[in-house]
Length: 83
Image 1 (cartoon, rainbow, N blue to C red):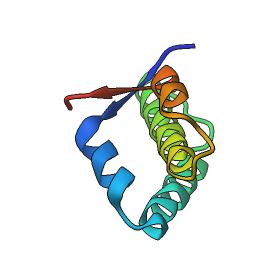
Image 2: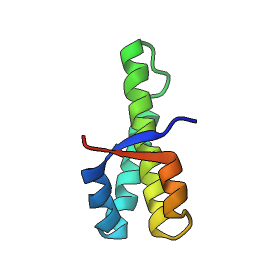
Image 3: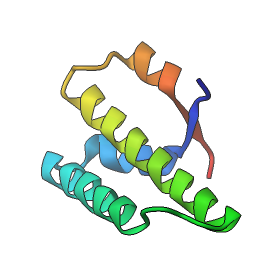
Image 4: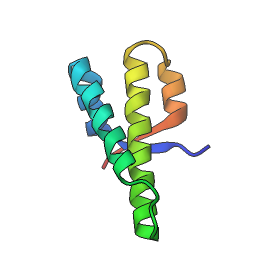
């Protein structure tokens, strides 16, 4: 399984924000994915995968914050990037 690239600045924001803000962003990302159901073109599939990866990373951050995921396990799933 490949690591999910995720911007370190965004990680820092969601790691320290109020829990409700992170949960609201997870909810919005889930809704955006549902609205993009059945992507047809390569570009639509790429955007869908990017949104899916972002949602997964946000969920991992939530689990990390709640102590359900260790920092080590988080790093096995998400790669923090400069951009």
